[in-house]
Image (cartoon, rainbow, N blue to C red):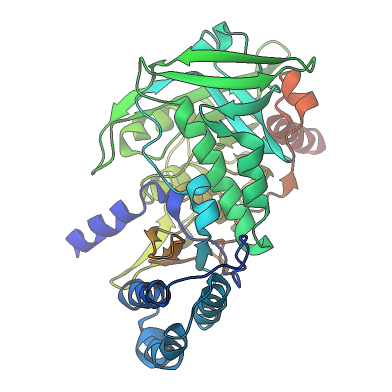
Length: 444
């Protein structure tokens, strides 16, 4: 059992390629001829993947075989792209679950995972806003900062990728998979901004004054605690702590942020929470945190609950894991003040499990933008047609029995990013969380 649990926890690492809602797929390319052999091979690939990996084995044994028998003859008559689209939509429609969808071949290159990213950083992070992308954060002293790049500037191009064209393609998707694909594109845009140290990134931007400019940024080594986990490349884990003071010394709100859920950061996270134990409230910043080791939510969550409680349940074909958290000491006991959690479109996997679990048990209020909707461990498989099939290999239910896969964590207070706020270095989601903590203090 220990071996199975270890394998399961490993599957929760970096669930950035997790599944999204189903959709009756409508191709965004004009009808075109298609070889029947490609249609049959694509149908067979999707059917085999579901048969081998879908967590609902009762469905597989009772229904999925009949789907093959009834629909495969139709695949053998297909000669157009539109015909294949219709067949795959009908096929996945038989699953009646929210964990399976197809990314069209014409869009797959915009969101499919690649090897972008490395051990370096340009110090620049971007986020999709509206029909384009804006600079979200710039680290002090980083190559981006030294090049005169500031939050709020519009990002036109990252290397060869024209941002608006990529966003336009993703926005052309049906409503159901669009949110997940936009989150994937956020990751895709940010990956090249953290290449191996010494490599360069070329960016084109438009300043707040409307003037265009270009910069070539040479990445420097990332700061943080370097960790090697499983088959992942070395990752630099970073924990940040900030005390928001009022009246010179009183801590109105403590902010702890971290970029990934890895065990090597556990001691730093414990020190951070204990350092903020005297604050009126604590803000946990999970923006940009793509996930990590799922079991960490049990240890970290224990700092904020007075009794044993579950943050949800994950189930695979082999086992069920209850994310139960037990109280942990922060001074005389667990931290009892208000807790706010910040999420955005790049908060995924373990971050979503933690945020929604804390929200559902009434222990935290969530601020920011809707999360990535990628809580489940999942796989992305290329198909003979050129499409990409995204499918979950587990199921997760929150403490109330609901699902967040495909929907994401919905903030209690949705705080959109705006060019005006970013250009003035105003962190609107954080300020909203601090304001909430202040309101509780004044009302008590």
